[in-house]
View 1 (tube, one colour):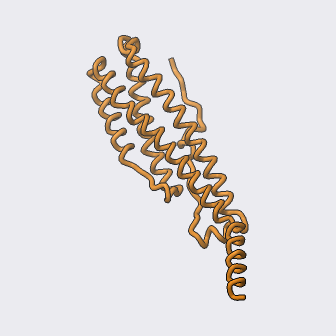
View 2 (tube, helix red, strand yellow):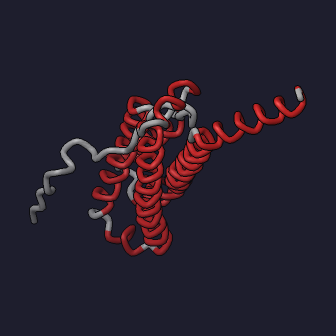
View 3 (tube, one colour):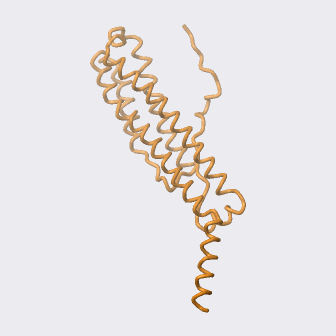
Length: 192
């Protein structure tokens, strides 16, 4: 009789945990971590392209040293900032995004300075690197969107009743998302 009671209690316990949402939260948490890894992968690809871009520009535009130095420094800062996938809080994501945005701005200044060098613009290596960089920026955008979607799904699960009770018991917390850069809602001014 004790054996039958133990099996029955074990079965009830297993069934209650399977319906409590714990496994769903674990699955969604792992999905978010996977999406975050893809975001980091896309940013790393961009960081890997930058030395080649800087070297190509340096050969043709040697008096743009301050712009090149700014790009190299921004890349160094961006590659030093890491986020622990188990702590994807709003603050951590904002800090990561801020360093990546600084790198984007320095690359933008570099590409604008290139306009003054027709020989460089015609250089096939530079054109290829610029195309790869544009493709990488698109990848970053796609990966950030996929990450935000995974976080939204996870956060909805963690905050919904009765999952929120189990989430609190097992330490599942809402995760942060990427947001638009400040001032992105205003159209840039183009002057000729």
